[in-house]
Each structure stands twice: as structure tokens, then as C-alpha cells.
Length: 171
Image 1 (cartoon, rainbow, N blue to C red):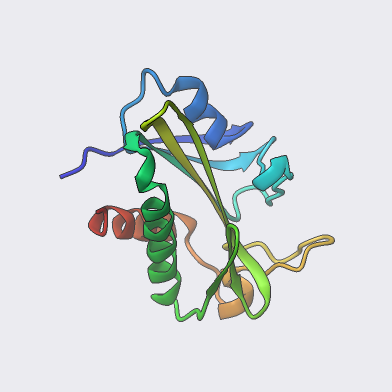
Image 2 (cartoon, helix red, strand yellow):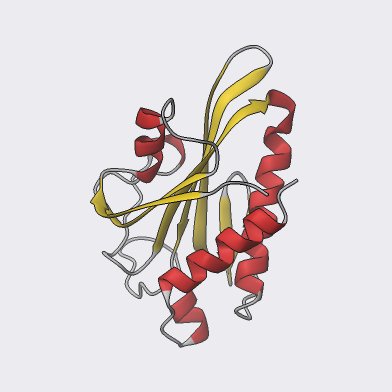
């Protein structure tokens, strides 16, 4: 069984940055969740904006990963997200390079960051931004679980379900 640690914040610049800055003293399968990120980002340093307390902002780290496992990790994360959203009745699809869509609107972003050497990564950090209860998206073609289901969701329950799916299906 994998040992898991969850660290939670009300507000933090970035959950992924926290893991990067502290990776030497944190164990593999450390998860970091926050209600609000002041410097959340997506691919190519694009800013990730999220309403305070309305969405799942979660990153986790796996250490000492063989380089050839990166694609497997991406597929594992996608599958776990799909399973979580499917359990809520959502029909979602993946849009390369790192987005989950529902009805042609972005629902979730995945950001994978690595630090490594020739044959292995010191760490792989997976950041997940899932729109849960947000209902206004300025200038973005996005949606949320709330907008799709017409029901307010419990962010912590969705986080728990996602973490369970990740851990139960870990290769």
C-alpha cells in the first residue's frame, strides 16, 4: 500500500511550486490542496484563475520515476480523472496536450512537471485544476461540474474520490 500525505492550505502561490520547493524533504505521494492559488498556472506558464474555494486545486508528487514511465503516468492520471467525473454522470474527453473537456468547454487542466537526470526523474509533479462550483469564467470557454450537473458539489468529496481512484489504480 502506498503511503499518502495530504497538506492543505487556505491560500498559497502554487501547489506545484510548493512541492518543487520542498521535494527533498517530502515523500512520494505527497498531495497538496488549496482553496486559492495566487500564482496558479497551466502549460507554458499560462495563468490559471480560480474562484476562491470553488474548485479543486491539487498537486501531487511521485519520486524516483523511470523516464520511460511518464506517458504511463499521464494515462493513469487521465483515467482516474475520467473515472471520477464519470461517477458524477459527466461525459468527458481529453484534448491534447493536457485538458479535459465536457461539451466543448474546458473542465479540467493537468500540468506535469519533472526534474531529472539521464535515466530517471527525481520527481514528477502532477497539478490538477478541476472546475467544480465556479459558474463565471471571464474570457474563457470553460465549464464546471456545477454548470454541467446543476448541483453544488462538495469539493473535498470530489478530491477524496479522485485520490481514491488514483491510489486504487496506481500501476
